[in-house]
Length: 241
Image (cartoon, rainbow, N blue to C red; front, side):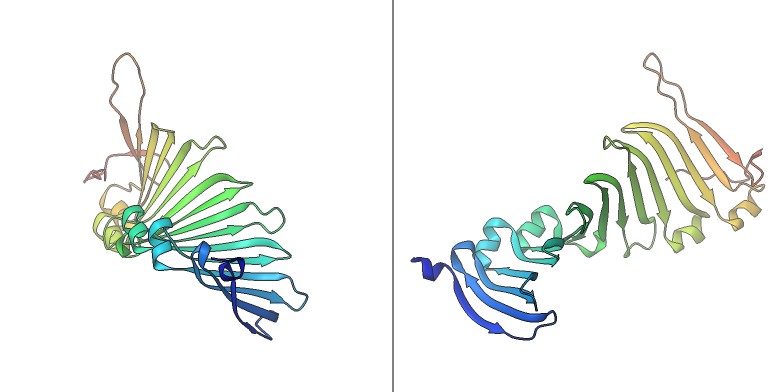
């Protein structure tokens, strides 16, 4: 294949959405079956779109990539994956957002291949992971969202579990929070609805404290509190999920 066959311009579109030109091409050696580069009226790149051949996608995993730019700095990348990759890695699409001032990533969203798995979003500050949010929109029972928080070293320090409306009605618990140091559990809290509190001696919160003793095990301690932070005994103790 000669140098001219490696890159083939397919056409030019004038007056695109950015006020400039869009160049259509393909680049067989890089697996690009369809490419689009869109420029503004000053000739600055605004968007790059790449669609890869099936053979390339099956080998390398990527089906398509779209990059968006602002003042020559990439601010967004959307990458879709082949069916083979999605089946193996369970991710159908990844969208990464970048800070325009520094070019560092600030947010990454993964859409999973199976609808019931939902999607997650990871937030970064200067490239360091701060938290992750997991969404399960298809769940009728259990968690509808799980948020995890990390310290600067990447160690897990808190997990928030938010429950579906159906679970809240059935169980009377709207949220639970795990506090930890990595794999070491410290404390967990459950927060109850007004309906649960009325039926359980005013209990609005349950707290379980965990103990880490290398010499002998110590059973966790559990307490219930009312809205005055006074300990109470519920009529029906809440079963941990």
